[in-house]
Length: 390
Image 1 (cartoon, rainbow, N blue to C red):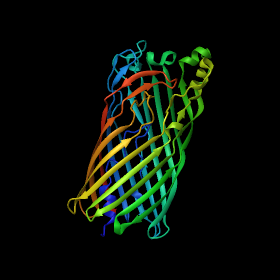
Image 2 (cartoon, rainbow, N blue to C red):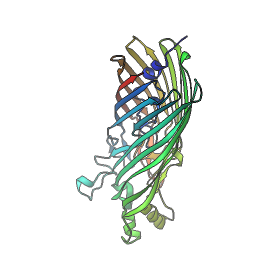
Image 3 (spheres, one colour):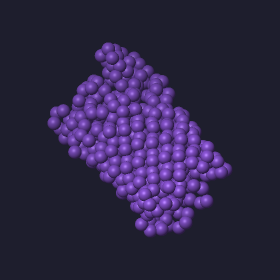
Image 4 (cartoon, rainbow, N blue to C red):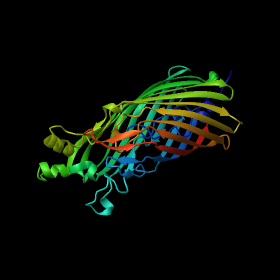
């Protein structure tokens, strides 16, 4: 059996593999597929993510869809420097949250103007990874490089849910550097490619701006609203494998592990005021369990120009109860994608995923349950334009 690795990498991998709605703040599995393309390669992709998360607060009030739609871009370029050395630059948006509570429930303040009455969260990230790959021999490659990450957050907590901290605001914006390293094994004549990639945590030391109603009480308003603080995005491990079944069919598997159970964000004034009031500093958000996600798929070349892939997905979630900025407990999902070769160099891909989220209780970092979220779903639609030249 003789297969073409260029086809396997370019055609069977899901066009939506770059974006998801997963545990914690995860919005991208941070794949590095472009590095394994042959010759000169470039791609640009767009993804629309639409989760639908509804529930009830502890007073029995309905919570309408609080997870807002959002979009993201990703791109990558790759070139061979010489027969043994290759370079790839990859951009993605790995972490995010977009939440807004509306209606008549405990996440809405009744003593504030309508424009400032909603609990809302907006977290964004941008990540640029530069990877050098070195071929130890015809089958084995080692690779690594730096990852430059920007992380932004804007948080507004409102309503009876947050008690004396209704009116809390938090904002920061920071850029920091991490690193990536990995090892791959390829056997193109059998259509085999396996890779193991480690991505380090990224520590952001930022000026965090806070308005803390509880601090106004315990410190009589005598505190700085801008302080130095730290938030660390988690490390991760990605294991990918694919192999050919015959000249037109291949299967693949992707496994990702992220220790979200170690993640906790302690803004300085919130921590100080809860320590003074409760004897224990509380984080703004944390998670109780680590995340494991799995994708299994099969790809089929239907014609010289057209290939399709189908996949099944599972995500463990990061614990139940879950923070109210993402009250789901993992998901099951299904994906479908197609790639059409416009000509010998250009190709267009289109794909989608549908996800069934696990039921979860929403809780505060004090471990107080404040809502129930059940029977929720979401979908993702993505497209990609790619260029390849030897």
